[in-house]
Length: 251
Ligand SMILES: Nc1ncnc2c1ncn2[C@@H]1O[C@H](COP(=O)(O)OP(=O)(O)OP(=O)(O)O)[C@@H](O)[C@H]1O
Ligand SMILES: [Mg+2]
Image (cartoon, rainbow, N blue to C red; front, top):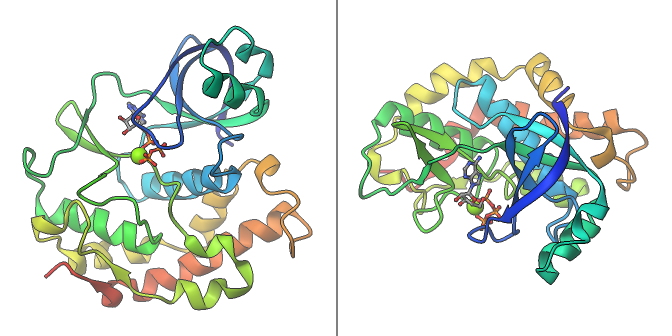
């Protein structure tokens, strides 16, 4: 289970994010980046953040710690910005939070070199989860104390938007030509040899168990949250074995 905290104060919106994430303080006095359950992108974005973030972490990639943030919608009452107030008001209940990496800089492919081994691991992982949101235009990578951290996994696993065609959709190749790390000669073969064997049914059970039930209810075609968890795990297990042969655009 992800740690659960309670939001006590809304600090500021993070304007650079398309979904308008916010910075909040919680009852443990720490600051978290909050992704709202009431944001236009919907709760599937939050499920994707949890599945990909918790999977990446277990593969040894750096991802800020994820928590669930309980939000009382009255927190929005004093908020002067109408857009933020609407988000706070529509996001009562369970939201996603992540550790705020204070002082982190956005990754700039022209300013920070990345070695082929690390680039390979990240590109392979992004191919596995079909991340379309790590381009050089919008890398969603942060540099924090000299290390590269992965954020923003909301635009992944496109197959979860249409479960009946998930199997066919998950078999598709991954185009890495726009990837922020494509220029660093990512060593995909080494990454696949190292990481693919770690993706087991047991690991995926552990990862999907972290998704809060509240985001898994009322999905057409699934009777229980656990049935939906299994649907998240299946394409990843299949893809892990083959995806390295289907990554295009890194040579
Ligand atoms: N854990 C974090 N620590 C520090 N800053 C962060 C963190 N998470 C996000 N940010 C900052 O907030 C911005 C928006 O976050 P994120 O990319 O997750 O949001 P988004 O709304 O999904 O964005 P996008 O516009 O890429 O769709 C990031 O570009 C980064 O500057
Ligand atoms: Mg982003």
